[in-house]
Length: 145
Image 1 (cartoon, rainbow, N blue to C red):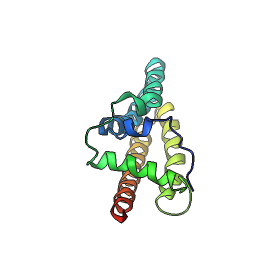
Image 2 (cartoon, rainbow, N blue to C red):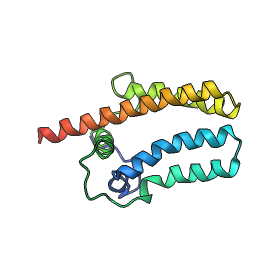
Image 3 (cartoon, rainbow, N blue to C red):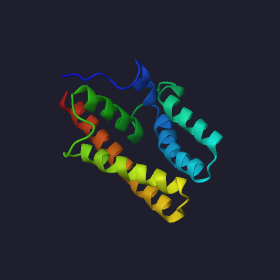
Image 4 (cartoon, rainbow, N blue to C red):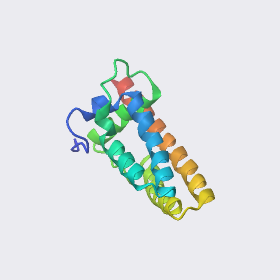
């Protein structure tokens, strides 16, 4: 059963650009830094960038790379009707990542450097695990065809 995409028409193909995925992940670090410094204009700019990111980059000529395959896997995962949050793998990664990232945002706002850094490193590692799982899903699905 196909599930409606959370992204606008055409956004997935542009988001497969590895620059889109890489800068979006690094945008999470920029968000924490601007929040930590209470740099409100920078925070607003970062949020705007993160919202627009999936459509900022052109569709790539080649999607034979880890980041592109992760995005293609996420698109396929959603289209196949799989949940993004749940107790199974890999959706449990998101279940863990959301509250941890909220805690990290709070730590950044309160200017707790160690908590912010550790939270960022763990959430970033979880994000990498999720992207890897989505890439493996994409490759397994592609190989079945």
